[in-house]
Amino acid sequence: MKELVPTGKLRVAIAVSPTPSALYAVKDASTGKFRGVTVDLGTALAKKLGVPVEFIPHLASGEIQNSAGSGKWDVTFMPVDDERRKFVDFGNAYHLLQSTYLVAPGSKIMTVDEANEPGVRIGGAANTATFRAAQRTAPKATFVSFPGVDAAINAMNSGEIDAIALSRESLTGAAPKIPGSRILDGGFLNSSTAVAVPKGKPEALAYVGQFIEEAKAAGLVRKAFDAMNLKNSQVAPAGMKP
View 1: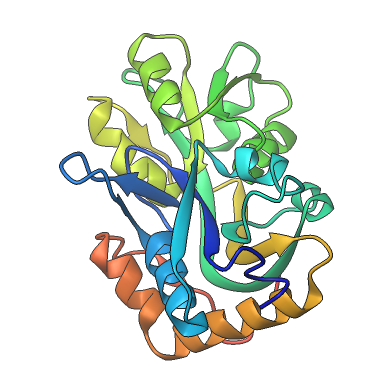
View 2: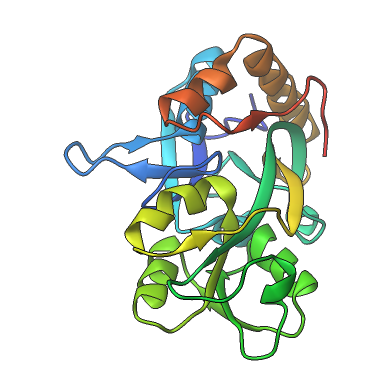
């Protein structure tokens, strides 16, 4: 409790987007409340601990990562990559992640490999695992970073970028906002989304890792996916650690 709930309430850092995914929550326009997989998991964790919950919104997981040493949040959920391990310690995975591209209306890009060409402008959320993976796998392309998903969607609608790099779930929600856009088959990143805590909190890490295993076994993770209409999202196998 000392490591995980130092203020007496569980402060959950969440990423907020116009469309939901295993990572991104959405803000309900009528109530002002957040809804999503990470909201459901954070709420259940706080209930198990017997403490109130507070959600700390961020534009993307990169922003959460960069605030890990600030003491402003206690637990989060984010895609795993090596760069991020410098800032947080990952617990167990709850989601199998694939990232790919949404290409602009009229684009001739048909495969992930074809995005790796000079003159192709790829947008994404700054400092995210997905955007870093796109930069590694498409070194010939030009990359344009945005603070969040909304800004990337607006840029594609304005003709400023040719592709958006995001998780397949996020792109499924974003595509209708860009008429004529297409999601490519295959992916440039196959990873997982996991629970995480700021570095140096071993007892908190062990507790939240066990919580994720219980949540998967009880069907809570599957239920959280389905509640956000993420029917194709895959729950990570039991015991999976990044």
